[in-house]
Each structure stands twice: as C-alpha cells, then as structure tokens.
Image (cartoon, rainbow, N blue to C red):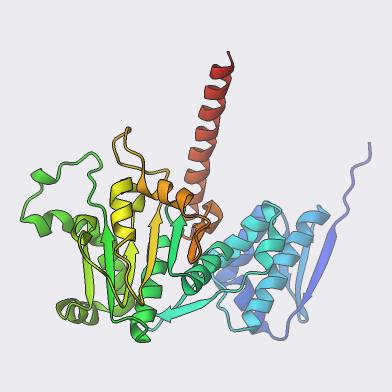
Amino acid sequence: MEKNNRIFEKHIELDSPEEALSLLGACSCHGDLVERALSVDCETTAEGMVIRGPVRKKVEAAAQIFDRLHELCRDGTPVTEQLVRYLLDAALADTFSEAELFTPDLICVNAKGKPVLSKTAGQKNYIEAIRKHDLTFAIGPAGTGKTYLSVAMAVKAFRDHDVSRIILTRPAVEAGENLGFLPGDLQNKVDPYMRPLYDSLNDLMGYDAYHRHLERGEIEVSPLAYMRGRTLDDAFIILDEAQNSTREQMKMFLTRIGYNAKAVVTGDITQIDLPRSTRSGLADAAALLKNVEGIANIELTERDVVRNPLVQRIIRAYEKADEKRMKNRREGYKR
C-alpha cells in the first residue's frame, strides 16, 4: 500500500514581524506548545506565518488558534502561555467554538500596576455573574481563580466607592490537624486558615494600603464563626472554602447580608473536610437556592484552571477515578 505523504498548509497574514513575535512568544515558546500538541510546524515568513502538517484537521486547529490570538493581540490583549494553553485545550477537546468567543475581561489593576484579567470563558462568566447579582455561588476545582477573582472584584468595588468595606471569611475547619496544638493565641491559631485571603489582598492592594485599611476597619478577615449576630451593610462579603461550612453555618452567613451588599460564596465540593456524616452547607445552599432571583450559580471546571498545567492533569485523574468508583458502586447495587 502506497504511503500518503501529503502535507497540508495554512497561511496567516500578519502586519509586522512584531506581531509574529507576539503570537509565537519569546524563543517561539508559544509556537512550540502548539507544534508539540498538534504535530504541526509553524514558520514565519515575510508575509506572516505558515502552518504545515500531515493531518488537515490539526493544521486547521492550529490556524484557528493563531487567528484568534492575532485578533486578541490587535485588541491589545497580551498573548500569554496560559491563553495559548487555554485555546489549545479547547481545540483538542472540540470546544473551540466556545473558547473562540472568549475575550479577557479587565477587572482591576494590582499593586504592581499589572492588569487583572479573566483568563477563561468560565472566569469571564463568573465575573459577569458577580457584577449582575447580589449573591454568587462559585463551585469549582483548585486553581480556577475562585478566591482571587472574587477578592479582585471586592477591591474594585471598594476603590470605586460602591461599598465602604470588604469582609472576607472562611470556616476554620481542621483538615487532619488540631488547632489546639498550634502555638499562640486564638488569632495566631486561625491566621493560617486566612493566609490565602491575606496574600490576595496584599497582591491587589499592596502591603501598606492593605494594613492601613485593615487598621481602619475597612477590611476585615475573620473566621466564619465570628459572623453570627451581625448585619453586613454596604459591604462586599466573601465566604471562601465554603464547602467546609455546615448547613447551619451557611444559613447563618447568608442571612447576614444587608443593604447595598454583595456576597460571593466559593468552594470546591470535591475537597470537603467535614465529618462524613455532616452535609456541606455549600452543596446544600447551591441546590436549594439555584432558582432564587438575584442569585447566580457558576460552575468552573478543569478547563478554567490557570495554575501549572499539571494541576489540570491531576484533577482529570481524580475525576476519572471518581467516575470509575461510582460506576463500580452502581454495578454492585444492580447485583
């Protein structure tokens, strides 16, 4: 049988060599990603870029990716490795039509002057939900930006004087450790649980500004138990790691929301540290309130992970194991 050595080509016209550099990245790091994943060759020419490969579908997918990157680049969006990986994953999963509509959304500028942008379509939907609703539930795996983006939206609302204070809270639930054996007073014991929130505020506001607002009482970071009995008016309120709240704690928190207040509840229901007999308040509330006016439910997936690509592979491996376990359990019930 004669071997087919046909090579398919796609041409992308660019306005300047600088555009080619932006698309392919320093030392062609972005081009290398696409080449390895799709088994194509990407070359620059005087007119633009040429993509070649033995499989038409993969050549067309690579062209789609670079066409979209070119459009975003023209609109002033920086082409990053994470953005390239996002479009590449979408192409490999045959969901490119959805990813192609995605345009990064500027949220605010951090303390170092860098723009904070939504990096996936799921993150953009999350940001839009926060803007349009008084209460937003965001459920998704680690690395999808649930906490950081909600804090960024809180900082933006505070800077714009839409609210007069930011309140961040978390359940102080032990995950195999015992709080009583940690050194220091109560605040020292709960500080490690609040560390991700401190880090986000420091990055977005800067150390001095954050501590200045903290001393004035305009920013509050505290365990969920401290919310009982309060009414939170004119505030942006975030309940983080909410999968570790009980049903009673969640009801208590949600009934604290006052006038001119916006609340965001985030969590990952695959990482619950509560006792097995205790139902997660996050899972319960998201299901109970999904059709209530003024409330949004956002589900982020492994496609929205913006950490090391290894995190996506880890999440997928766990999901496959969980699916296999559930399948075996169902088959066991049938017997």
